[in-house]
Length: 544
Image (cartoon, rainbow, N blue to C red; front, side, top):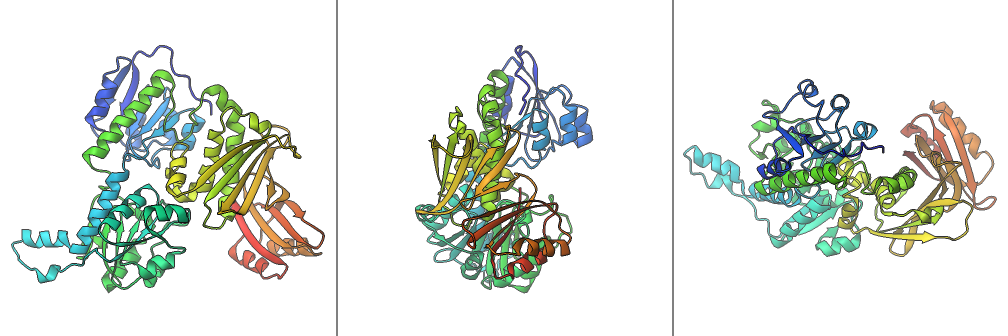
């Protein structure tokens, strides 16, 4: 990524603070004579922001200000955007990357604060504290109406066992709760370290939990996952806490479940649309606790995030140091140019493996072979592989900085090796996934002709030639005549065009691997029809 060089003359670089951060963070900026600091008194709309960003060298935001592609285009001097917090959903990272603007955040600053908020919500829900307070404030004394339930001995189901979920688990165990954790990336060894029971599927959480707390990112798989179907599988009288992302819960279905009593209560800090509409049905329910997105709203968290964002932006502007960047590895410019081609290849290999791998993988082994072993720093490439592999674990919050921490929190061991073993290709990158000592999947890639032409050239231990973009259909089948024609006929009948094809087999009549590069995503009906053929053992649709 071509970043703008840090200015040699550092006088009066303009730091524009768009959202409120801690006074210590502001003071840190103001103490530097090289900076001219502007603190906006209110959140500006996009149109208003366009008129004030033209000479800004740095933008400091939290979640309120949207740094869109239009804002980035207007900020012609911009070098860095700093997010005082973890998520960067309000920043168009791709547009920033294209313009050479580094985007930084402050991962980890909100972990304990959000975990504590979750547990306080859990306790308030169990003992009906907000409703009891409202009754007392109204002059009443009604003890029977607010009889609650103990946490001791109850089962807490945690959906998402990363940093925050792990901290919630510690607190629940201290209260004598039994903790079940569901996370496709959580390993058995990490679950044992946390003292939780690893649930192999969601139905276990739904069936056994008295309380369920959500700590997952918003991805296509998690959006609306707590819906009418999920509620119907839950233990009657379950209580639900969500301090993660509002989009994970189908709010209309939750209201219905609360009104019927299937869900005894809910404590929510986040919502599909924020601020929550004044006439939203959730506001009228007596068995709901609502707070206005307070998960990160503590003095300590805001202090840490505000000061940290000031430190990382100042470091970049004054010395060129890159910390906590979501779109740039923390390496010098020369090294970055050497590793840059491998970053895209590595991320795509990781993404491919994630879409094909079984849920439980506890070790990733990465081999840099041939010319690739000469890369001065392999860490940026490893992080790119992990980012592709773990993107469904943390969604848009995952980045080059926090990806190793996410992997560690899930108990995923990472191994790297440089190899000069002779192979077919001049340079190659190979990634293997293990569960215990058993290799469950592997893929390898190289470049055809130039670094601008990456290909995946090995999958399931068989040679292939796969482009690293677009829609792919991978079929494992018994090698027999007529399979290719059958595939083309079925896909053609469903309006799916084949752009390219790669065929491979171990032995004549043995197991074959067919990879089709498609112009569109094949419909579920086509996949089901293909799967019905007895010669076909697996059908997988992948998008890269």
